[in-house]
Amino acid sequence: MAELAAAGVPVQVQLPDEALQLAHALLAASQQGTISDVAGLLERDAPAWYQDDSLGWSCLHYAAERREPALLRKLLSGGAVWNAVDKWGRTAGEICLSLGDKTGWEIIRNEGVRAEMLHHALREANKLKAAEKEEMTVEPGEEGKEGAEVTQTGDGITLRNHDESSAGDNLAFLASKLTWETGEDGRERVLDADGNGVMMGWEEPLMREHVRLMAPREDLSILSVGFGLGIVDRLFQETKPRSHVIIEAHPQVLQHMRDTGVYDWPNVTVLEGRWQDFASGEGLEKLLEAAQGGFDAVFVDTFAEGYEDLKAFFEILPDILNPEGIFSFWNGLGATNPTIYAVSSSLAELHLDDVGLEVEWHTVPIAQSLAEEVWKGVRRRYWELPGYQLPIAKMRLM
Image (cartoon, helix red, strand yellow):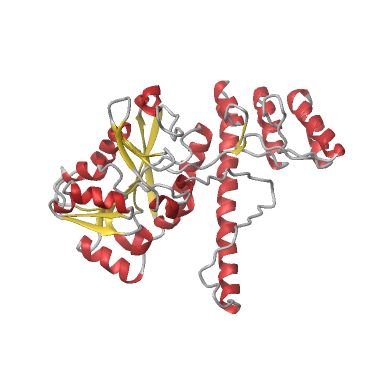
């Protein structure tokens, strides 16, 4: 349920007078000028990421109003930020959607996918370089120390929100106090110490659809990563699995599972720890032993983990998923914005393809998630879309 953060909001940056003049000229040209005008300003290094004070609009927002594909492409190639949001949280993609401009929206979405793929590729390259350097020079006492990540894409600036609450750090979340309560919609929910929704009852129809598509028969070997309210695991139990492995790390959730008898469910094995503890070595052996081989269905729904963590989980799927098995995950990254959500889903599809899995998407309407009473008492909404894209991934047939 972590978010793929939008850029901007807008960010205030002190620009030299000449750069500020170029920025305003580019905003004006994007709104009313020609492509040649825009190209000339970009050649003079006009900052394409700049957002105005009145609306928080960037040159890409103004260009989106004009429904000119060539203008969008020119700005994006010149450094316009695909996921910059205005004062209402809208990207230029939402401007296109509001005008029914599918072509423009697809241009922005495709740039988002390209930029994010490049970001991840460079991040992996930087990791390899850092690992090689670490092997050569490791200072005493520094083996476990992590530094700040600095990634430069070279073709623009992608700004990301930083979340210092427990929702933005998995280890902080695991040390935080959780609260089980009933919301004003009458459904059970779990909140963290900062009031963020860890899992909420409105998700049950989505979990039911996940289980319907993932476990169509009895006697399957199932892995569920992240217990939350236990909605999906209770539904998996109804399919009478041969083995049902649950990985959970939060001590309060584990105690809740003991108190409510989850440890005594038929054919259930609870592995206490983070999924990373069971991704290699003896941990992986323990996981496969609990599965009695491999898994027929694997579902992931963690909290306070980002896309990098999900991508890392993708990479162990060939080791744990049976050849005819099904993988799915809670697809909630970026679910406060339709363009960012589409980019996040496309990115997951491409990275699953890298490990040999093909994805089929199922659209599930979820209008009840938008009801105001659902979110009363919750620090922030993590869902603002009327529909859910449910992924079903299977190993590619050779």
